[in-house]
Image (cartoon, rainbow, N blue to C red):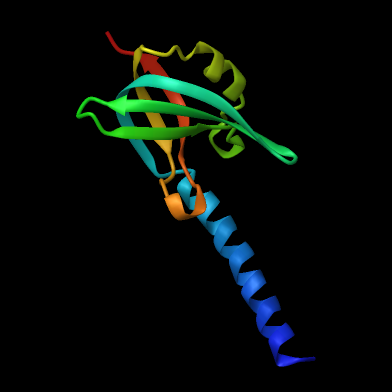
Length: 116
């Protein structure tokens, strides 16, 4: 087998493994934010669709969250969550994961509650 093909195969396997490890570990990296929803949308790419929630934190920083079902956390209501979030309302968000702009990775909303 050509060495180049072998290297490509090994790198591909490592990339898939790293992605699976990231998703598993990120699912349990918990953070909480208080933020006001400024916009929300549904993104469709090929066979995949997911929700994004655009927010502004209390200090003025902008934060974008992903809203998808997460079976490992028992969250299977992302469409309901998206429908209940209202633009202009302040919420406390419990999220999991990390924001990695280079790979378009976002923290995922696990729970939320309105803050007065």
